[in-house]
Structures are given as structure tokens and as C-alpha cells.
Length: 183
Image 1 (cartoon, rainbow, N blue to C red):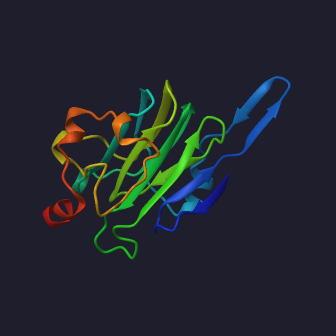
Image 2: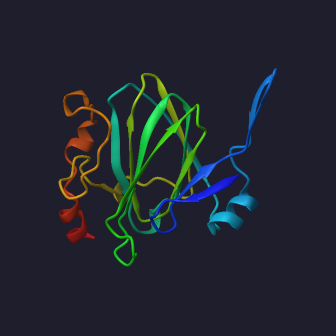
């Protein structure tokens, strides 16, 4: 596996080794020992989630607070997304910084999002399937987030604003500056 720095502390793009021949292909999606050696992440993934979405869906920006904070390893099984991570750790040298990368079934890249980061993605193709592992269990009361089109973060989601589809919950998220004040 190839691990690439993102410019955000503790956040990495992972490029798994991919083999293809006349029979098909093989991808080792995760190797705990190698992952730990190359990223320094020593947690265990305890939860696996998968979503299917259509073009224009934006999910996020989300995180879990406190004891339910989650690190995530995100990959695309089918289709394409723009995956976005925002460092929301006040004591981090990259606090408030944004990183985005296109993940697709074709490029097989994954994004490791550490605890304390906001995470979200926009769907760039119909019928896109996103799979991600989390190192902690979900807790509704610990859920928080930031509105996707925050004026300070200035994220280009690669979707025209008139084509964006949000959940009702995501339409009610606050701007980053209010999120920071409440944390």
C-alpha cells in the first residue's frame, strides 16, 4: 500500500496494491499491520457502513464528538465521489484546513480521516456506492456537523448548487464558526 500525505495532520490518502490479469482483478483493501506502520494509527475498525447515492447528493460535513469520536477509512466500491476532510481539532497545526480528493472504483484510492475531523462527500456519478470503516460506534447524541456550503471553508464540491441534494438533517447544520464556538 502507498500512503500519501494530504497536508492535514494525520489524514492520508491510501493507494492499495491492485492486481489485474485475464481472470479479473484483486485488491487488498486493508492490512492492519501495514496500515499501522505507515500511518501511525493504532485503533481498530469496529463498524462498517455503506451508502448508495445518486449524482448531486452531498453527505456531510459530519463528525462524532467526545468519547464517540470516529476515525474513518473511506473507499468507493462503484462510481465516483469527491471526499472531503476538515481538521476540526482546535489544538492542531492544520485546524480549519480542508482537503479533498476524488475517490472512485477506477482509482481505488481511500481516504483515512482521523478522529476530530469533519467528513463529507459529494456524489459525482449515479448509483455510487461508498464503503467506510469506523474505529468507534455511532451515537446519535454525539453527532454534530457543519453546513456543506460554509462561507469560510469555501469547499468546491464539484456539483452545481442547483443540483445539490441534501438530507433534511444536513440542511440544518451550522456554519464552521458557530461549530467552533460550541465545541
